[in-house]
Image (cartoon, rainbow, N blue to C red; front, side):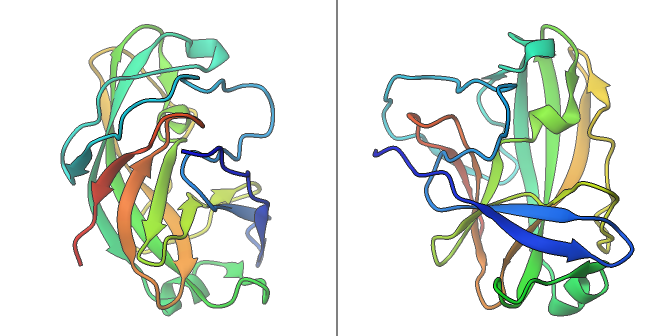
Length: 202
């Protein structure tokens, strides 16, 4: 596949909550990381990655983060629910007019540490992406100075570390254009590997 062009951030402002950003990906494998804290997992092209069903665990992933380099973990998306316009309006976020109306998508996942050094939850779910039925890809909403509020999708401590044998279920919120639907949850694997994909059935 061709190397994608990293996109720019969506601009969102918060009402008494904080500044937020969400990253929209224009092609598989794009990364929003701003520093050199993460290296891509592979530089060699691979065959098409398999499609999974919700509830299936990913193959073991290897951490490229400096503090946990070499640790392995799995990601298991278990449930995907599209929220409503009211959910967004009650979240504490103010929509930028350039983005148009948006609704949240809630993705529940189980993160499991398999081996190696302790690893933060926020690093284990960092490569999750929601792909819509219109082909748009977006990363989870990042709240920089506070927490947005979503019904039945509580914020989790992204700095909490798991050790080998430990698992934790989390919920992450993504924003997609109103009128589109979540078609799949993807786990990106760098620029040169196709993402793993969990199909979302309507």
